Image (cartoon, rainbow, N blue to C red; front, side, top):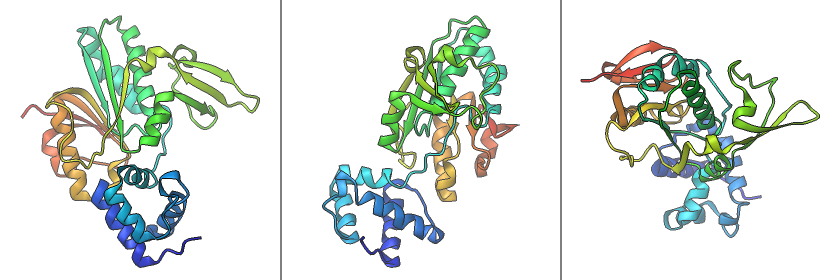
Length: 279
C-alpha cells in the first residue's frame, strides 16, 4: 500500500481546490488518504506509484484529472429529499406557470446519481396533470462527477421505502417500472416520460461562467453542495446561479445553506426557498 505523508495530503488538498473549488480541511486527512488509495486502483491511475507523479499527471492528463475529481465528490442523495421543496413547486412555483401553459425550464445544479432531477421531473408531470396544463418542461441536470452522470442517465435505482419516504401523491408506477424484491426494497427504472424531460451534462459550479443565458431558468435547485466550498466561493456560485434565474424565479437551497450577502437580491419564503427580486 502506498504511504502518503501529511505534506502530500496538503498538496492534494490544494490541487483539489485549484481544479474544482472543493475545500477539504485538515480534519479530513484520513478520508483523503482513503480516497487516494481507492483512486490509485482505478484504470486511469493504475501506473501511478507516487503522489508527486499523480499530481503531475492530473495537470497534463484530462482523464486522470476527472478521475481525481470524481474520487473526491460526495454523493448522498435520495428521492424527494427535503420534500417541502417539491410541495412548494406544486402549490406555488409551478401553479401560475402551469395555468398559463408557459414553457418551463429548471436547472438542477448538483444532480449526483439522478434521484433529484427524476424527483423534479415527476413533480412537474404531477403538477401538469393537476393543473390540466400544456406546459412544455425542460430540466438541465448537471454534476461535476462524470461517473454519477452516467448512473443518472441509466435511471436505475434500488429504493427502500422504509428508509426513503415518498410523498403520498407520488404513484411510483406512473413514473418508473417497479419490481419488488423479497427483502421489501424496490427496483426502479425511470420511464421514458421522465427521461425525456431531462438533459444530463457535466458542469463544475466553480467555473467562472456557466453555459446558459442570463435569466434562463424558472427554478434552480442547488441543494447540499455549497457546503463543500469556502464561503467566498459559495457567494460567487450563488451570484452565477441567480444570474441564470429569471426575476420572480425560485431558488431552492439545502437545509444548512443560505444566500449569504446576496440576501438583498431575493425574497425569503422559508424552508430555504428564495424568490429572485427584479432589481
